[in-house]
Image (cartoon, rainbow over the protein chains, first blue to last red):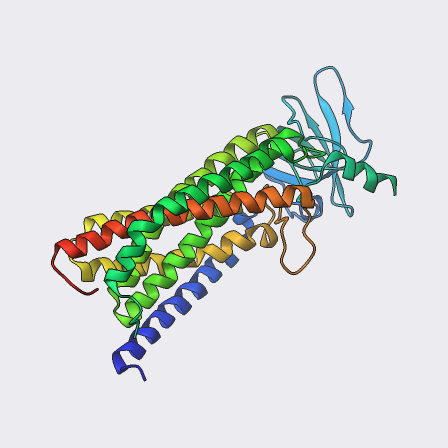
Length: 139
Length: 235
């Protein structure tokens, strides 16, 4: 139905696309560590050696774990398997709240203590009006 | 094949349709903006900041959709050696580029009050930036290469490189830890956005799509005029 040239050009495009997809896949696979924006407390626990590099830890702020002192805030990041204690002094984003997602950037003091230099709130994919949230909460 | 691309018939449509599309766009945009900015409820968590979503999300969708269309048009044009496909792709690309910029800028404006930062090098945001670079490369290559043969080959290659990025953008939030939240609107499972917020979002998407159509018709019309002036009676 189509000419030989048309078929060859189709094959050509197909080959380019396959090659590129495979190479991009391999590159991303090997760069996985750098592609992730943050690590979970469980992943931190598995780090073999602690270095002085700046890292990001992300997870949920544990319920009723936030304590404000005069110049800093302390809270616990949890992924419901492992936990890490965070201390931080500085501006706090509006959506920072217990039971919500958070990403802390800073340095590990040891496997359980993290000193943050910056805090980002991570919000989830749920959008609803306050009345609906209340109705859900009352159930 | 492609007998249905009668240049004169297309030209009649592309020179008359824009005013009707413009009218429709204005109507849909006013409904969408009223819904999004005034009638839709505020979010339980983000309160009024959520309204940026009604511009951010449609803009991102449209820019992804247009890049995908441009890629398929270029590939078809390349395989079947059909110039018309390339011209359609060329006319589509600018609005996709603009919506990509809008998505990134509104994302930054949204990120500051909610996340606490304008910019984060997470997978979703970085891959959107890469898409913008591909758009830029695509648009520039139409200007710097003189011979049509060359332009067709180069732009096809650029779109093939860029299309690999599109599924990465879509699934980046599922494959890796990102600061960006996962998708709220799912075709297969239940969406996590309340219907009172979903409808304004869909109306705004329709408005942006109409705007892209309007720009496309005007651009394509210009391309057809260029061909007419060259004295060619077929594409």
